[in-house]
Length: 299
Image (cartoon, rainbow, N blue to C red; front, side, top):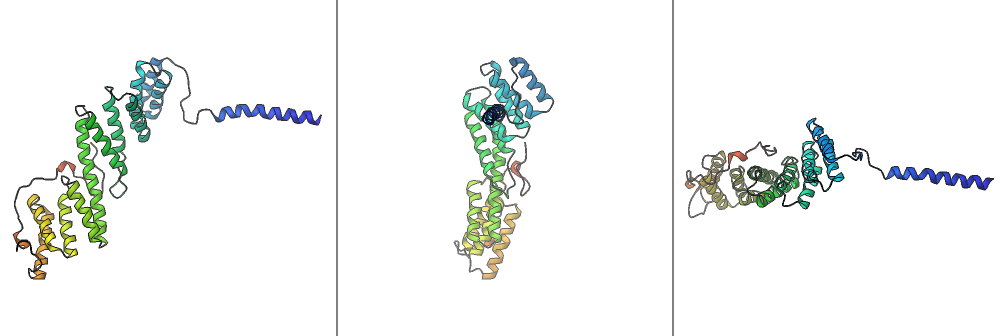
């Protein structure tokens, strides 16, 4: 009897384990339950859910359209609608994943430019403050550049170009932030590399005048006043009416007075000879300006 009882207990335990194993492999919490429905009613339910403002659930229902009816005329559009609703729900990583999957499967679709725009905007909405890592900012830049490159005549290309201007200004702001940090720490050479980077790579941004003036400060601190004078001359030629040019002249005049004019050897010139008026090109576009330390303005 004892052996029979043990065997019965073992069989009962195995029988109980089967349904538990089935539960373990079932859908996770939050997944949309699989209920077979015709494509029109399922798509209509997704559309109504979106209209009610439940964007995340709407995205899942649009995913369900594709899952249940992958070869229907609704499936392809549902992929884009899924990405769009994830974007509205601020589930940006899900939006990027959904849109990129659509682009992989349907690169030549009429909706491909919009899917690429969703990818780019999903990165754009996650751009952090200039004091933080700018990996996402670079990803947004790459995505918008891809949009302009592949779909230059699409309705989204113009906005992509505007966003690229804002992103470029933001990246320049990051370089300025790091340069100022090095300057405050007295690491003049490291600071000059950052300010030079702004001038060389982001010369059309609103940060260029300050970068040139900061170079004047760093070159004077490093004991190379001739280089400081040249930076001020470039600043005066392109941005003669700015505070940064006036500040650079004050620094150079102080240096000249301190050394009785011996510090400057650029063709025998002194700071007083620095140009005060000249062509204003290139000017930093005012549209790319934003508060120091802030994100690019949303458009």
